[in-house]
Length: 281
Image 1 (tube, one colour):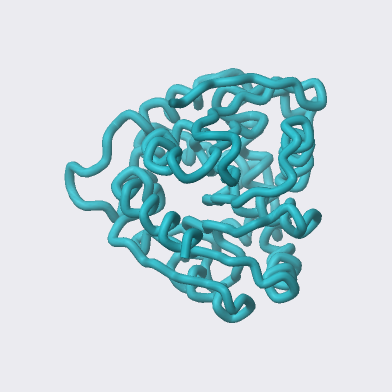
Image 2 (cartoon, helix red, strand yellow):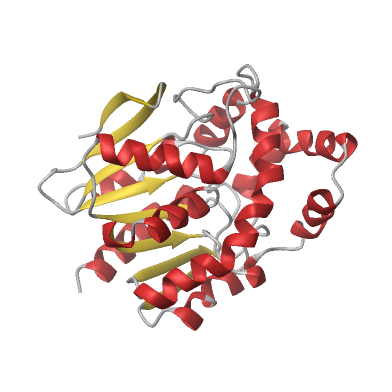
């Protein structure tokens, strides 16, 4: 059974979903852009007999607090600090971690700082390698290297309904993606200050790329059990990023699925079965 909660963390309201028996091993579920914890709505019922599941919304996303970007630092490192405080409030210090898209650097910052907390990792299109960046990142590199207001404003197209729907449907078979997820994501783009806080995160993403060597050092040093399950048709984070984990971590399984960026929209049951098999060997 799924339950829904809000907890105070550092003067913020952090919303999260919970399912499964707390006596089971915990799995933390970190969402991506432009979504929130609702992206796990099909996965959580498929895993709840095996794990205790916690899926928060990051600040600025979903049902969590979204302070104005002039009053709050929308950086991935700061979000990781808020999520660390969230975990401490829930007394969670031993868990598996499912990371996707934006949730990946947030999760990897936490793993790097608290390696003893991590029992294993599922990386679903959760990149940590330069070779995993698709072609679109070249223009973002130009924005990062030579930022202007005009370039910043050009990324407002990322929040257009057609763009968000495309993130869900690109690389998928026809008529396989429910409108529920992207319709809710589009609705969230209409909340006050949405574009400015998301534009801050787009600009800050460069610091995640700069941190890739630190994440890779974590994999080398701690050799976490890691399941890299990838929508192989994702234009943002391409399959080379999944294969690259093997270079640093001997405990990696790679599964490439015939779908796009939001692989859970089409393959939630498949991914659940891969997780159960991988961590219950």
